[in-house]
Picture (cartoon, rainbow, N blue to C red):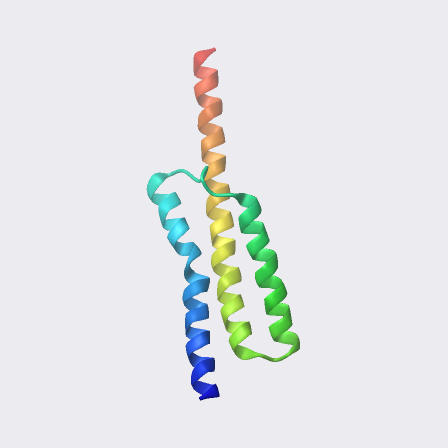
Length: 100
């Protein structure tokens, strides 16, 4: 039973770790990241890093697997937010300079 629970929780942990992909999809589709809090993403990244460290110290493979996936996907979210925020800022600058 314990082994089954480990497999099920690891699989669900990976699904949870992939959840930020949904936000990435919305940002790319809308071409707008203004609704995503960078602070929230950074808090997630720190938490996943801490859990990964805990998993490594304790050699706990399910925790390691889920948090590696979570770190990678959440880092992708942070990059996506950064790219679209940069585009928004550049667009704002161009619009302001066109008005001048």
